[in-house]
Length: 226
Image (tube, rainbow, N blue to C red; front, top):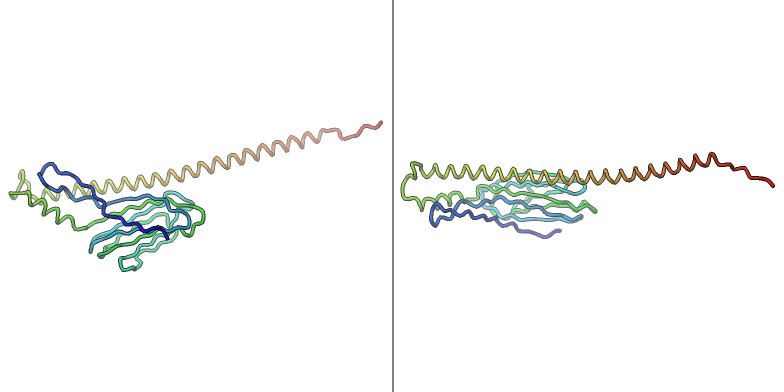
């Protein structure tokens, strides 16, 4: 069994200069992590979640023989939600109940090869949006601002935030795909070099044997008599 790791909510504070004393926008709750899992070991992580939120877990095996791993996702009550064996990647989205969710990566089936694993957590409906709107309303004295209603401002901000989050998510996935492809290419490059050297050695040995055999055919093996 590997060590148990708790994943707190990532906090990214965006300072607001437009409204004095405002706490800013809702912090991003998306996070990603890359780690190396040694052969014959298992690593588990825990993520606390509120009731009726959305938890999306996406993982990829970036490097290691076979590019496969066992994945296990369990609810706070210990009920198995997802169990996958020898998979190279996967995406799972669940509606949560209150408590700590456990997800594990298992490499105990491998006795030699370690695995480099990337995973990303996307947390939605965490309850901050309503609190954010209340924080905004405390600093608005009228029903409009520059001929725009408060709801229109919040809708525009949420739309921008959603698109930025989606763009960041896509870029993270592209980096993970790039890392996996690069590892595959480097592995293939090493294999090509190794077998090229083996072929070269075999060709040199065969050439030497052929020269020796041809030379032996023209040697005069008759013994001179006295």
